[in-house]
Image (cartoon, rainbow, N blue to C red; front, top):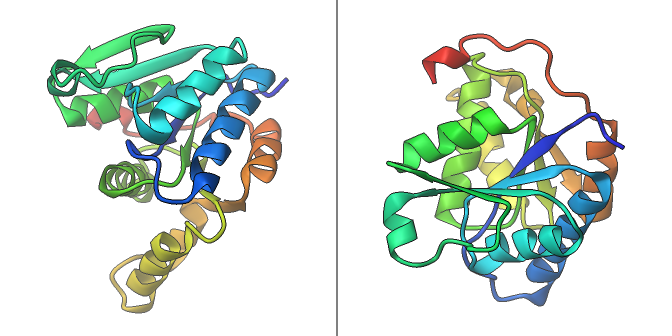
Length: 194
């Protein structure tokens, strides 16, 4: 049993073209349920988000979805989750996900996933939290994101220690193994400013 109680997963509202992404999402959800780690996610029933949630629920795990009101009105909310929290904005959604989570996983996804990942990394840079951030690489999926960060460091737009704000983990089995060894952050500063 891990010391982490809950983990936020940032991932796509689409499945992507390659079956490996959905397969990995299902594997992640099943693994979170086995480990007794509560899933916190964007609240959607579609794409990789829906797959992670479905697999966690199927394994007997707890799932909290956090979705802004306008997306709930588009009827993309996952009705079967343990708890569905409806927020008034995207920013409030991200803040609530932060509050509910001991760590963060950036999974395969698109612009929304990038937005969530960069915001949580920015908060880390600003010393608003010390929670672990794991980027799961599914067959090279993390390379463009990591290359962008490396480029920002190389060009002097990000601090040299930016790579210390996150870990890149290859594949779901290694990711689950890393989660089992993580401890929740014991010190945070400035989270009241989020």
